[in-house]
Image 1 (cartoon, rainbow, N blue to C red):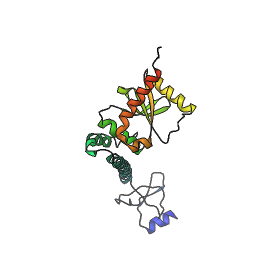
Image 2 (image 1 turned 30 degrees about the vertical axis):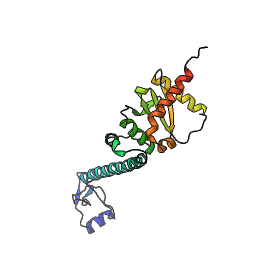
Image 3 (image 1 turned 90 degrees about the vertical axis):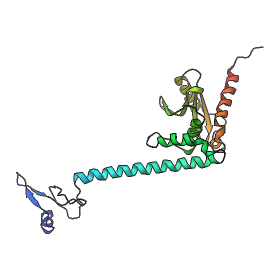
Image 4 (image 1 turned 180 degrees about the vertical axis):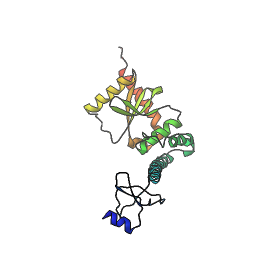
Length: 214
């Protein structure tokens, strides 16, 4: 059937050294003959060069699509910040966040972006998505010795699993490190209070752990 169709469609046919037929239908895109051991009329044949170009274009499209989604998240973060602060003060921070668009471990949520923007604006050095054993910490802030976690709705009492996780992270990061969890609700309420809130938690915990003398 394929041989008959090839003849009807005027597809070039050549025999190899072993006497087998090879068909050379044109590339759908550029027209270059594409060698095949069979011919099927309904098939769209594409040469290797055009196939590579298609893969490249697909990769670029996906990359641009990902960047567009990240830009949308960033704009959402800026709209929320704008309600409580002058967005012009975040110019340097915005540039920093945009620079990481191609990073696979970019911010997972709008709230994480807001935290990153606030920390950069305040001149606080932080590392994002730090791996600690099998865990990942949202932000590690060396100068404050804080492992900052951005959480959804928080219950008053942490469960045993979370407590163990926090202890493991604190021990791995080093003496004096504290794991602080901040709710997305508080971040969205007023991100400018992030740093004062972190320092207040540290101060409170320090007082509780200090020995009391009578």
